[in-house]
Amino acid sequence: MSKVILITGASSGIGKAIGDFLCTKDFKVYGTSRNPSKYLDSKFQLFDLDVNNADSIKLCIDKIIKIEGVLDVLINNAGVCITGPLEEIPEIEIKNNFNTNFFGPLNIIKKVLPLMRSKKRGLIINITSLAAYVGTPYRSVYSASKAALDLVSETLNMETKPFNIKVVTLAPGEFSTNIASRRYHASSEKNSPYHLNYSKALTLMNNHVSGGADPKLIAKLIFKIINSKNYESVKRCFTKEFKPYIIGKISKGKNKVKLNGSINWI
Image (cartoon, rainbow, N blue to C red; front, top):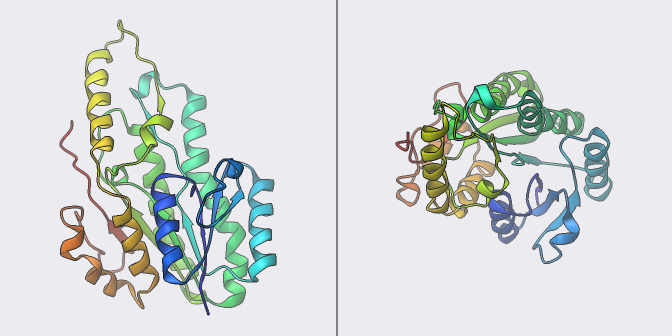
């Protein structure tokens, strides 16, 4: 029986690449978007979902349950980037970033867990970021939100182990997506003490994204994770095909897969 998979933030970028690839592997793939009507040519069905809206989450998950009666794999991919000197980022924007990158995924997880527990199986893959492991200037809030999701995932994996539900984090580095165009930039005026260094860092960040790796690499790794019987076997996913995008491996007892990015732009 084909596994049923839900990918959040699947209308573009990494989410779309994952969905397009998994569609070729005999899975029943569903994705989410805040504006699904704009993507009528999607290879898989997109449902309306705002990760910051509890009613929207409930409606989306209920639709999938009604159609399929099961959800085997949840891939929390939806997220937004934020940059700027911490001193100059408005508090409201910090909260907005955590709502999307941290609280949103948690609320979706809490909605799907009862179904997964009832079926005594499930896999949750939370897309975090290399930034969750490596502190870099002007990404403090983004790094913190992704690091928070990473640690919660690790503890949640322990909590759900008795129910045969696995929780994995996958941390991409710089991949070629449109994330830069949707990034919140704290405005740094020319008289700001951070202006010069922040401007240089932004240019380098944008160059790294535009020259980043193909998101299909992540899609292929996701496929191998889904088909892995245990986390140790995921190590075998680290083939030459993924070099130099691998910076780490799954640590014993820690279900983390770290993917590359060049981090020497500081």
